[in-house]
Image 1 (cartoon, rainbow, N blue to C red):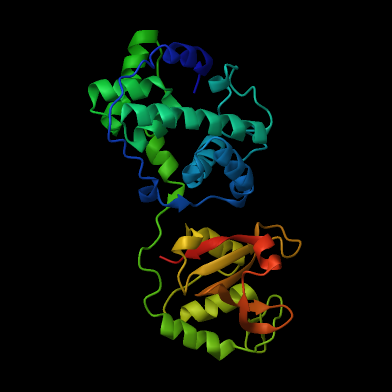
Image 2 (image 1 turned 90 degrees about the vertical axis):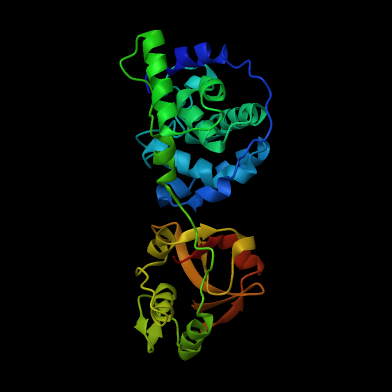
Length: 313
């Protein structure tokens, strides 16, 4: 978006908001980030800065925002949160992705606080990241604190008429960010007994990298075989499986969900190992040393390589 530096200065003058009640920030309805490994690599920095600025509940949303703002390529767009203007700089002045994450998360936290005070919904806060904070005030005054496409188009038109722009912002920014998120199934695996029977069928089969059968099998092929027994078709590799499922928190994980790990060997992918979570801190997986077996996923080794849980839809 052009002319952001000037707009942030102008918009900052509009933030004298009356305090309302009933703010409804239900990010859980957004789901979890479904992003490429090129975006996923920044998660730990997002988590660190989200903690620093008090927005840890919004890590998934921030990851989806990075996917939208950067197009998934930090090499082409080092200001991966497109937030230079919010720091009073010209567009794309920030050339370090980590610095961009820090400023972007900081700015989002400021908008979130303003939105909380104003009583708007989370969609309004999200759209204001693209439009600037003045959108919050506009929605409060004209749309009862609730964002929709009509409100976004009206504000864009208002800014064009006020400042002579031919266009202003991305009126579908909320929808575009949400396109990088996936909602998890609420029920999880309903026929776990059948899945467990398939797991027992492969128990003791040796691990073979690239193997797909009972003479030798690797971790992701094992997931394919077990899930196929309950009618679920998974992609071939652990990374592809990670990309295809809904990401869920540890508290949401149930027996039958997938558990993913990173950095277990040198690979050109973020995810390098996958297992089936069976509950009580244990998983079923294809171990390079023990073959297909049950194991604790709470050892220091697995905790240091843990990447997340996933649920098939």
